[in-house]
Image (cartoon, rainbow, N blue to C red; front, side):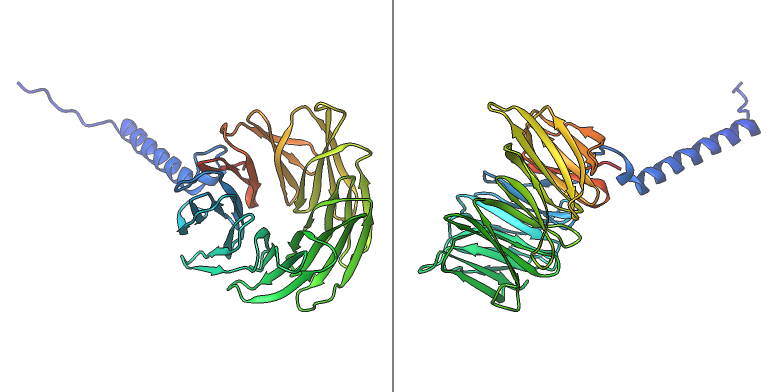
Length: 361
């Protein structure tokens, strides 16, 4: 005689239905909030080949250049544009509208666009530095025969908009602001000079001399303040080129800096043989937000909004608030040499073969 199959009790059946609903809700929640999961395995930006990888943030995507290939990635990690190249010293700069690629010390500028198209501009001399702003303007600092250097600003489609030919002092740095202003830093025998241009005019809107100081880099903060680092100090200039404040390094050696977002961050080493390293953050009005002695050597750092991401030697990385209060720490891969901090607490850790997004939500 076959055993009689008894129906499930009402309680057991109800429990099974409840468990199935709970499982469905968990799956839907994970799918809809996967960005909220800390240290989730996110999209990876994979390089096609080559060496000496250079990276730049392209909105929420990334741009990358190697000795053999240039690529533009979407936020999902998909390659949306690419070209083979033969670079010796690959470099790139980017925004959400384009990626600009060049071989440092060689002529020529390559541009890739998110729609898969590309353009090329043949520069008169070797390209030394390229900067891209949020509106898609491209500033190219290059050599030029008969001059000490040249800075050309291109429209997104590589139409030339502005050119400055240097006669008296070689330009070292060219940076574009979000509102299309150009900062040009030049070297003098007795120091440095800073010129601010509107790209619709050939004459400087403002000029500042720095006798006895060698300027190293410049960048525009989110409130429009120009942050300038020299070997001796961090300087903050307003839109008219007037000095707002000066943060002196007091004889310490500048080792790392970040000049974007809501504040500037500088790291200085005091003493010989890798002495004490002091990390300091200063807002656009010259107010010191935080100061912290850090035990490890800083490899790279980048600020965004009210936070600072610092990459230390030895596979250590820490996300700080602007006050330098520690938020969270993370251990990236061994080959990571560059970090980028995007919107919504997304960090990008860039190595020789790929770059990985980590969400700190």
